[in-house]
Length: 432
Ligand SMILES: Cc1cc2nc3c(=O)[nH]c(=O)nc-3n(C[C@H](O)[C@H](O)[C@H](O)COP(=O)(O)OP(=O)(O)OC[C@H]3O[C@@H](n4cnc5c(N)ncnc54)[C@H](O)[C@@H]3O)c2cc1C
Image (cartoon, rainbow, N blue to C red; front, side, top):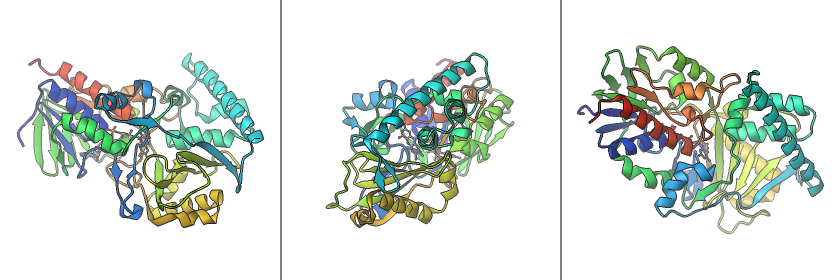
């Protein structure tokens, strides 16, 4: 391999976005990706257990559509995007539908809880402590019968971590409060079409093991297929990979970056899906989200989505501690989703499923070690600190975890961060 201006580690959304900008600016770039394909956590696949149906194992919705860079890229490319969750949300209590008389109080509770969380966050911003998201419920109404569901949704499902482990301020900054869009054939494929070509060639199947920044003026990168020297390096791997020291840094990462990593563990959102038989009809419209009423705060919950996109799947979502407890236990995860579906829609619903199903493995895959990062209480500033360039501006960590302006944890945020890192690196390198 000949030495480039810049090495980019990882070809997910952030790495592809950085490569596109740097190559567009005439810089020589090598992108190294340990997996055998690009896209990272935006991955559309067709596992055997789904009998020909495709699944987005990771990202599947385009959030915050008014400021999501992937929405802009898709529209520029003439892609069709359509609104997600067209079937709405349906709530169950035991085996019965929650009545309209009960959903009213749920909606009212969610609104009142949001107002309480916003007030508490305003206090934290003006010098108060940055508490856990669960503090909002403690202050508002800890015995409210809907609090468990509200926290399940905001914590385990959206943030992939339970409400008592999340920074309130970070939660508030990253609320997903606009509608979602879905592409026609998966976010992984969309990302590939929108960024794959512009980002240029990627060396797949090459894992980076060590990054040496001890000598001013350049960075040395050791991979499992040789050594590279570059003027600068952008590292886009997850905080799970960095915290587990799967890549060694020499010298060690600077103290503020290590402190930021300490504040940004990986949450886990797992998907387990079954193919719906072509002729099968459930008693719910396509794009419906099914949720069960939870008995107590922190109870294990699951969200079920019936044909959430153009693929004929019943997909279950497990998040936070519950998801971690089933990481690496794929059969149990699949069984729990199958049982959940039977509980909500009746045993006959299972007759409409074909195949063994498929389950995501983000928690146990050494290239990710989780789904996306969350900030611990008191660590709302960690994302900005994580993405601060070091080594005279020649090394930058970038990705969903470093996004600190409202898109953290998302593909759009990763694209934005890849672009930010590319511009920061160009500012640090000698002009051409
Ligand atoms: C289940 C799930 C559901 C999600 N849902 C949504 C959603 O609906 N909408 C949304 O916007 N986002 C969603 N996300 C989050 C989104 O997928 C991520 O935030 C985003 O894709 C992260 O991009 P990235 O470039 O920061 O990191 P990554 O995609 O992780 O890219 C980093 C790359 O580095 C590679 N790598 C790791 N180690 C090495 C090494 N040693 N050497 C070389 N390469 C290495 C990895 O293989 C990977 O390809 C979801 C994620 C998951 C897991």
